[in-house]
Length: 68
Image (tube, rainbow, N blue to C red):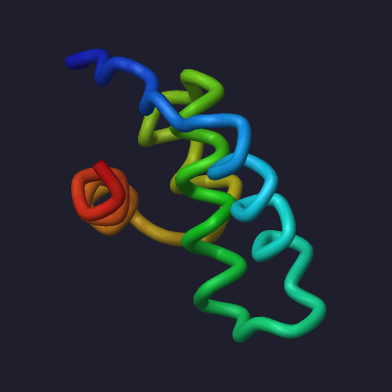
């Protein structure tokens, strides 16, 4: 299994992503994507992120790439 390096995000980006991940005033999809990026920034592998957010690895990889 190939390891993907953790995404690099700023403190400001992290705060915004955490706000979106809470999902109070955002769609479920936006909250899910924010969680993907936060987990990727914490170094969690795509396979594990996929299990945590209910997507497949390819979708997680796609959102990781789009954010980067």
